[in-house]
Length: 188
Image 1 (cartoon, helix red, strand yellow):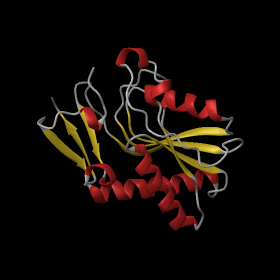
Image 2 (tube, rainbow, N blue to C red):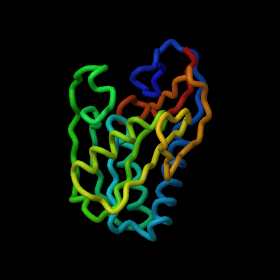
Image 3 (tube, rainbow, N blue to C red):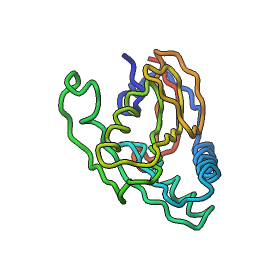
Image 4 (cartoon, rainbow, N blue to C red):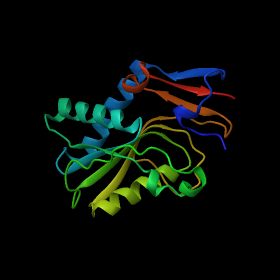
């Protein structure tokens, strides 16, 4: 199965850039506006980034919300490895730190990830959030929705809808991890 994750992409694969740094910045800013419009402000919101690239995206969203609304939104980080349905198949791997910045009880948790593909990571993230408490709602913000769902999952906030073939890899690079902001499609 071809992965949607940046870490799994072969560096020599032919690629096409679909979002540069400015386009990513604009997409994140637009999603921040959409989140604020839907909730009439930032009260009772918690942004939870899914490791690895969802965490810096959540921080960027929180920064934009703060600039727009002059309100601080708590940002946390989720490692969903223990909640994955393929954990036994892929085996153990080093765990990242999961951090809930506040009690999620009665709050709206916005999960933030880089790519929405099959929906399995989102399912695992929802399980991780629910294991921690009972939020009022869980929403999803993704930089890229590439389609090909295996589970009935839909993002509430999307930076870019990017139709792909199943054999293509969407590679997200972010300054915080990769030294550059870009999204590309790679064909193996």
